[in-house]
Image 1 (spheres, rainbow, N blue to C red):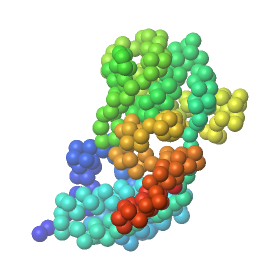
Image 2: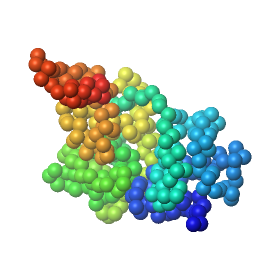
Image 3: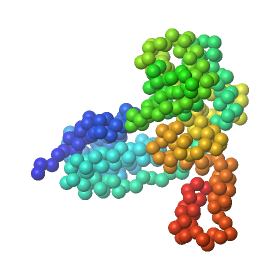
Length: 336
């Protein structure tokens, strides 16, 4: 049986599988693309193989391990970035193994490579006073100021990702009771999020001021009518963050990034006693495990977890089965 070359699998992986079958977002596809560009660059610079000479055997565990070390040592990449590049190559190997079982052995060696552990950074978020003060920064008497205010309000109220905000069109917002915004997240999965009457009023005022009435028009656009870029959104938020920080330095970190509003909303929901399962659905997480990071970063929430766990332990603890005891201990380890 004729063995297919690496270039064949790479081509089909990007042109057919990722966008069509896997349904991954454009940003994830771009991240995977960058991983391969860097891998090929490593092979060339290390003298292992020219791009024109790529063979399936070039994709082996030794070369992948060398590539990951090169990312850190030569390019100064973080451990998180290193792990993202590895995830892209593993996704590719999983695809190849399914398409061509004869390549399974080669792919399994790469799939066994472990991610590099890194210390988990605490979740950065703003308290409610900081969010409230930040909303006072934009000039609500100008169209540009209204746009920026509406953007910050929606990022916080909906807990949306930056790309979800950029992709918003007028038709995605329903002004009725309750007011809602439809967000399209990773894997093109849509979720409907309620927003307050105050937030809806701010958005409506901006849309009226900007004369946006086409249902397909991007809600947050630049002066040319094109959707704001990710860097554009980051710039706007940090601009107002700098102003707020000068006046109330104790409330803000050194730099505001869009995800901090998403984190803030999740933490405020959790502090108000909202169930993690609801917060998972609200944020569009695929697993509640991802959402649990918010429950582990607040000392007060940790105390509540301990109290909840304590209520499970009675004087008749011997009545628990061994499996129940093990489950309780596992729960405590995971959440405390």
